[in-house]
Length: 221
Image (cartoon, rainbow, N blue to C red; front, side, top):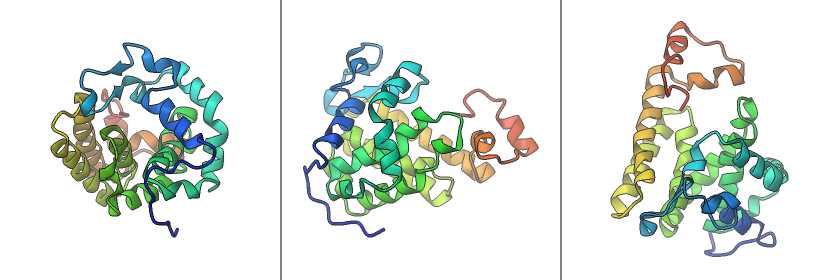
């Protein structure tokens, strides 16, 4: 995929990308003002939302109602032009990497657009565009590396998360925990060469060692 040069602060498609960013990062979503969802203890270090990583049927349904069509269009390549700008590229990443995990829990579709998301993330990192964005945006640029089952991507994610912590002194604790999760993901790939918790959804047969591993709390992240 040939990606164009990034142009800062351009949001295409009639502000659709901006609407996605506002929803996810806490401006327009009704859940955004819920005190149990948002930790604003350190705004300079990024606003962290617990709903991002919890199974929440209400949050999932809100994504389905507002963005299902966008997710399907992004998967079909309709929004490749969003890669023209760092901010809209993050919106595209959410459509390809995060929203499918909310919409298609337990199915192969949860991971089907991961390769597309990874290409966008790689470009943002390689061009240095990630460094121009707020901490929360950077965090979600790095997550596609964590979702990969390739060891090289796992190593890169750990390095990127470490760099985020080092470059943002007041980083919210929620994002700091991202480094621990990155290390844990890498350890699973080191051990099994894949994520065992995906086996059922992807029709892969689990090994005896993987079956034992999946009995452990937190093995499915």
